[in-house]
Length: 362
Ligand SMILES: [Zn+2]
Figure 1 (cartoon, rainbow, N blue to C red):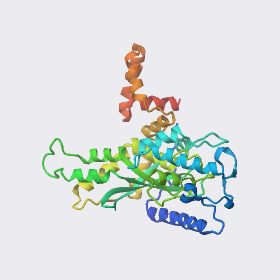
Figure 2 (cartoon, rainbow, N blue to C red):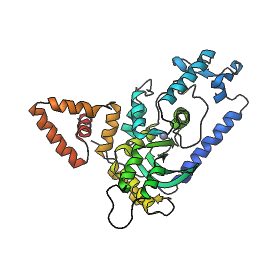
Figure 3 (cartoon, rainbow, N blue to C red):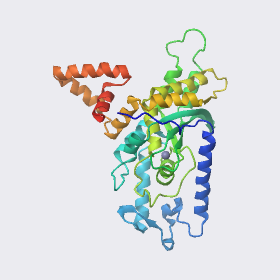
């Protein structure tokens, strides 16, 4: 079963400053790398065909560490196009992040593990700590800062993930037509509905870890789902095939956004503030005590474990098959399913999630 967590790493105070300091260091190193006389950054214009072969840059495309050739430039461009074709320009959804992490993972050549399996095994908690509204081109987004524990071999104890919910603009406007006094008309949007729309909708993200920096920041930038510094240097060594989509901290966070009741509750709290706010702004900061309480609950949450296990098994059509399967099921299986349904209800899960969880923890 699941081990009881050590939550000493969780620190709500100063989390924004910590994230900003790490990202500022990242940005400074990146700038220096680009300015260096023998810079090895393979920029946007290099990929567009202006690459000078005398620079003798290397790639690992195809599995071997070797010089970049003219054919590689075309392959890089094709990879960019293929990557971009997967996304609406509006961003990515939490569900899509989980499903892409599962369908096109980067596997560790020695252990065979992927970012998703590491998220499942090593990242126990992702807590929303603060929420605030940001504005770009007159459209508002809700920026939620999550904090996760770091993996067992990390030099730090926690990571900070910034998720930008693009649905905020539409949902906060919809709430303007919801009365705050008296009975709510049937068609009025509730903060809970708005929160649900937010978590299912388009978003962007970044993490302050090195995995995000060296493997995924470019993908997020090219795909239109980056909530931080743009990265236009092609990951020719670390991820030339543009595989995977997010680090384990982001994946755990996406699983929470997708399935956890505490995170839904947090978003509902934010949308309730939006409902009552005169200027559509929102500011939430969780106290250390509240964050710890949420973390303790969350780390044993079968819903989220099930969501990760589910994504790991890549079963996007699970519902349809199980419906058909149910129709054909023998009475024996029906009894079993009824028992699972009752139990699932108790845990606030779907029967499919419960079965996935049980299969995993046998
Ligand atoms: Zn990360």
